[in-house]
Length: 244
Figure (cartoon, rainbow, N blue to C red):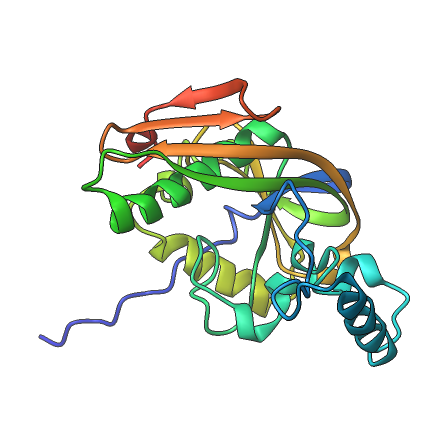
């Protein structure tokens, strides 16, 4: 007997609810608390820096949305994700057709999400060393005005939405949403009790504003993670392996 090919998931019932969302989402990206001069590797003379800055400004393409598009300003906050050169495999994309922008409803949720990925990097790179690896993060508020599919609570009947080991189902769902021209989803975080947004259209995001600096300290060998808000003051701490 010929075996029937596997059927594509039926997402109709799963996508029955939506929310007209108008508010801020929190974006957590790599950053440096202390600014570094962009041209100090070219010369030690501040006068040369001024010349380099003037040359960069003279050749810059004018834009009315500098805080959103310029790479030396807030470029990574919105536009970076949607540039095909930076697409990557994530929960709702396999990284080959489109990018997905992720934000959360609160800062704590962004920490749990990004802490897991940072822990995995440290584990792969320095996991056999008993040492603390430090990185800095910058947190932004970004305005979102969009009709979003509301998947909150759906993870009870559909645990694949928060599967920590496989993105196969959610990537198929993301592909379907992208093909249907949908804006994105609100969904429970797989790493905490918080809520994430996965946004598929850059036009639904605007007005990035600085919110906070964070410092992450990870010792993968000892399974220890600490987030500092003011530098040097512990804010959140947990065993990062518990997020996997």
